[in-house]
Image (cartoon, rainbow, N blue to C red):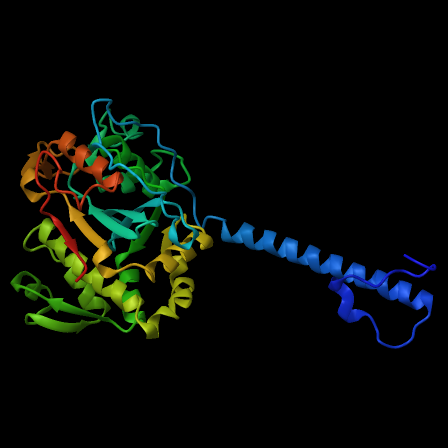
Length: 378
């Protein structure tokens, strides 16, 4: 300040400084008002960012329960590859790896589809591992209400965890107990979940105008009544194809992979990708998830950068499983007993550990059985 007059305002309010002649008092008043205006803009901007961060980072549902289990000390993942260059930063501001528990529910509330999705934001790559729902597993927190029984089919964990069953009071409900069950039995460490009922899936397919799919063999012809070759399927046909299991649960998983690949391709088509925010908003009440809006944005961003060949669908090798039955049926009055898969859980844990580490599928040194059960989007 010189000669009793305030110096010229800063750049923040420079455009507000009049070009006409003013008295000293007028200049002082204008300068003070300009400073106040700048302070308000900065304050509004700051709190606007804070509000965005609050809502963008606020989960849309209750979080999964914290893991309390660890794998046996004798289990190993394998020798990691040596790194000679700095690790690239993850795409889209995401974490290096995100693991998602994806569940598909039928009209009766049963868990029809159980998949674990590993999202690699660095490569980028998405790997999807299917868990057969008829595995006989330990389910925590149910023994007190089941006369000491602590085992059931994997898909029953969601049922036991539902709030109206009173087996446990965690806010995450069925998906939380199912996540904990996968952790205890197989070492799955899920970060987030997404639960979609089958009818919502059907509506999503219709909302994007259907999907184009190539029916490759006879096992899928039975599902839709359509001959082999390329077809445009509406939501109902896509759901029928995904749920068909006449040739067995492993064939059904392959059918589901075809549908998911076709849906992913459709969602990234130029005429649909701009509709994704509206689709999310339209179906948000029909999807249970603990994602935040920010994380959904990260996943949507990664989807635009993900080559189709970097999407892998995996199942445990079919030869590991043998059909069996639990007799007498402890939960249903079935004289034949309840159908389950007889399989060595230690072998499945080894596969899961390699899946968690990003070493399977895609590496040939998987033990004790060579991996031949993965498929990729065409």
